[in-house]
Image 1 (cartoon, rainbow, N blue to C red):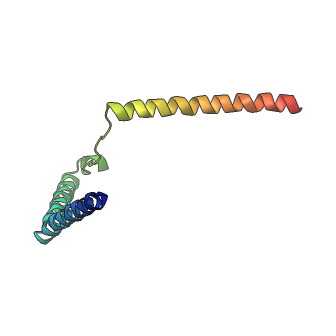
Image 2: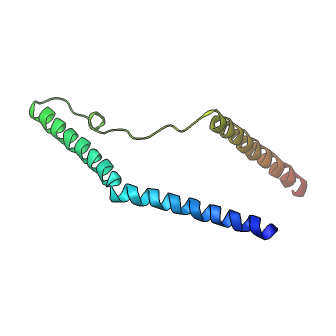
Image 3: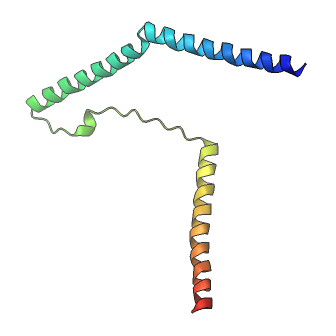
Length: 109
């Protein structure tokens, strides 16, 4: 009986992986990735043209005006709590360890 359950689990994993493979294959064959890259190139070319136009007009140019920021903030409440907790543990370990080593140093000196 246990053999049938593990056999079903194996086929479930195998079929799931096949579906994922087919999805990625179709996305690649239809050119989805290349179209996203082309969109980036268009934005870059537009930024270059804008930069050249601004330089020709004698405007004050800075690099930040022409770069697009693509960083996304993935922080949420759980990650903020985890970061806060890890900072507190780090500070406790740093100060606690240094105090512990001072006490050990006084014992042996």
